[in-house]
Length: 281
Image (cartoon, rainbow, N blue to C red; front, side, top):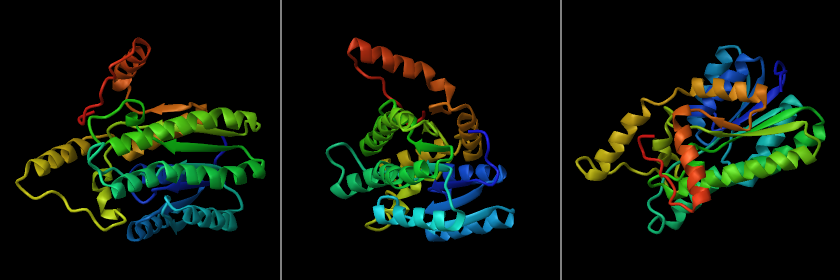
């Protein structure tokens, strides 16, 4: 896809982090941008800032885990702009405990946003985009943790592996559908976002940090410090933009992880064990 000016992009999780970086980048190309986020105050602020900078935006509060919310998002986007040319299924959360001691609610929340949010976006928007007949692009946000299992956070890992698999299947389905809509899967590594604070939007109410002075709090503070050194969302957005222009399917943001990916491939062929993605990665 090469022509962006005057076209329309929809970005979920657009009020902060990678989503906001993508929204700003598309606006810089002269695109209309539909901002979707579950956090109303942050969404309003993003829309205000982007409008003040000269962008044409539509802000729609959206819980991507709910199909009816995503359907309403599509209806409003098409009613306002007539078509959608780029869809970024980007909204994501992190949370939960271990594989067998996470609560049912935590599993359902993480999978609901990270995986079902992408499924809902694809099922809602792709038929409309195909029917429109224009060229278009889908970017599904997974993670490097969707390629290499992390040391912890199994619900997050499961959700991101699912997004990678969904995107790989879509690649061939879209080719069979005529090839005017392309797809990429974004697998970012360490990025300076607020994903460690995702519990603020937990459906059962905000999740409090562990108590000061505990080992759990010390670990969380350490990981937060690591995340602050991560890639800026604006840098990630530049990588995504280049991938859309060049139709690159796997969008990997951190080349330093390539040896680990090669190790994973070798372990797969040899029968394991799998390499592990450590928190500092």
